[in-house]
Image 1: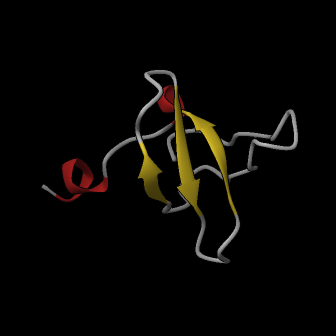
Image 2 (image 1 turned 180 degrees about the horizontal axis):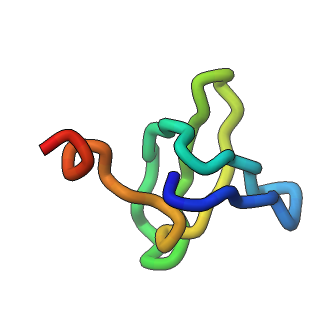
Length: 57
């Protein structure tokens, strides 16, 4: 995550800056459905995310 995101409703999930998440669904252009390392799932804004493969190259 590029930025910390605080969940605003029951479908969102709070994620800290720098946390690695797995995207499960990209159907919405503005929101990704993700899973955290603790197995919690929810939506985060696409603009708050960054592909890890780009960080490693």
